Each structure stands twice: as C-alpha cells, then as structure tokens.
Length: 179
Image 1 (cartoon, rainbow, N blue to C red):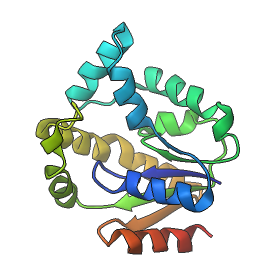
Image 2: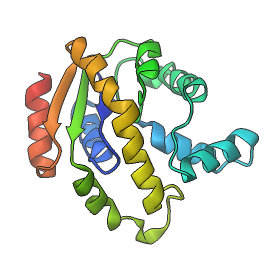
Image 3: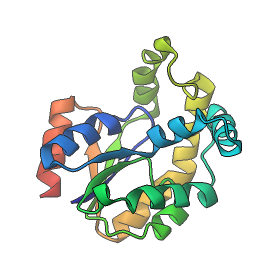
Image 4: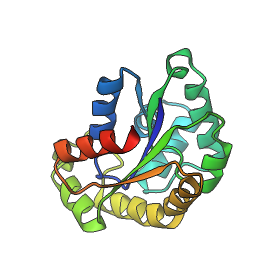
C-alpha cells in the first residue's frame, strides 16, 4: 500500500504515519526529516536548504522532486510506504512517478496547529520551528498545497479526516476509510 499524508505542520502526520507504518508493516518516509538531515550537511545544498527552511519557505520543486524520487526509488519503498511532506505543490504531485493508493488529508485549523506546536519548541532541536517560520509554512500550505488536495480529489484518491480528534479516533477513522 502506498499512502500520502497531507496536512499543515502540527496536524499529526508523523504520529499517524508511524502508526500506519506499524499497522501495515511498511516504511514511513518523512521528507521533512530528510530535509532537516540535509540542512545539517556542510555543503552548498545543505546551507541552501537550511536557509530556506529557516525562513519558512518550501524547497523549490526543481530540488525537492529529485530528492523525493531518489528516496522512493530505493528498494525498501518498492512494496509500499507512508509518505509525509511530499507532494506539497501540484507540480510535485504531477511528477510523482509512483502509483498512489490513498491520500489522507489530516484537516486541522491553523489555530489548533499553532497551539499544538507552541509546546514543542522548548528543546530547540529543529532550527525551522520558529513561530514566524511555522506561520509562513501554514500560509504556504494554504496557497500551494491546498490545490494538491483538489488534484487527488479529482483522481478519487483523497480521504479527508478531522485531525482535531484524539490520536486513537483519527487512526481508527483512517483505517475505516482506506479499506
């Protein structure tokens, strides 16, 4: 099974992605995690990614599409995956070369996402979690990623979930809707 998780930062994608990965015994792939790892690299690309994510901007399609394609081509993802953080633009969705079974949209309000994230930045692990960067990514989600929902809705692949319920309720609803 090949599943994409879409939602604004703080919507619970990683929580649900890990639960689904465990349930279906397929790997969970977070492009956000990949990007944060690349941002630590002392390379030209690493510095560019760090500066871009720190400001709250998205990595441009011409860089992000090959990164995602490279990972998805790996052997461990051939029999299925839970993909979080990609695609974030319609161009990325159109260029995604693998078959997708379901796209799960975890719908939460901006207010709920900001509330959830406000308590997570105290450890300072993520350089890209400043309040201004989070607000910018939420704004970009509405501008660039919401059209991706329409792209997958038109293909009959989109499943919308109320992401403001409990973790257990959300997981149960996802499992009911993807069968």
